Image 1: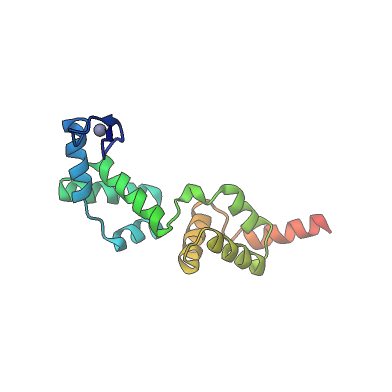
Image 2: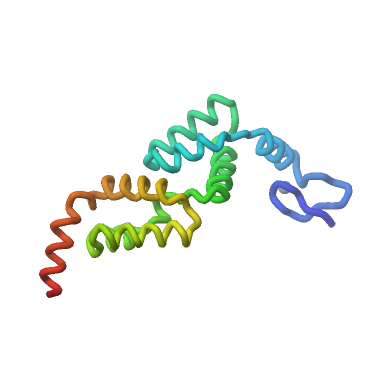
Amino acid sequence: MSHCPFCNKKIAMSKAFCSKHCKENYFQLIAIQIPKLFIKNIFIFCTSEQKDAKIEEFANRHGWRIDLVKDKINNLAAEYGYVHDDEISNYFMVRLYYFCNETQRKDEIKFFSKRHNLDLKELEIKIEKLAEKRGYKNKNESLTEKYKKMRS
Ligand SMILES: [Zn+2]
């Protein structure tokens, strides 16, 4: 027994793929080339809507299937250590912006970048953008002060 290289289903030794469909997908997936810079741009500087739009445009421009392009991008992004918005949890953001002062926030972000093996500068940009998007930014100083007063 051997395995289909695309879907991993068991197949006879004499066969290379389980189906024509898998054979086509497999070769298309290999043909898809995605520049590292493109992945960096969509994961660091785009909102998730912008990211989806860029991936769709990229796939269409090259005549590749969007689902395969997305698969490949997600795999590469994980390999390069880029995080999705949803991997930076709301809880983490609340802790950063509501319960930390600026120094503590910097330390927390540094620790997070080490733990997830991420580039610190890029993570800072990402978190700042998220904070802006979710409305945590600018509120933070006054809220931190408020909590401090409540706790003291
Ligand atoms: Zn297959």
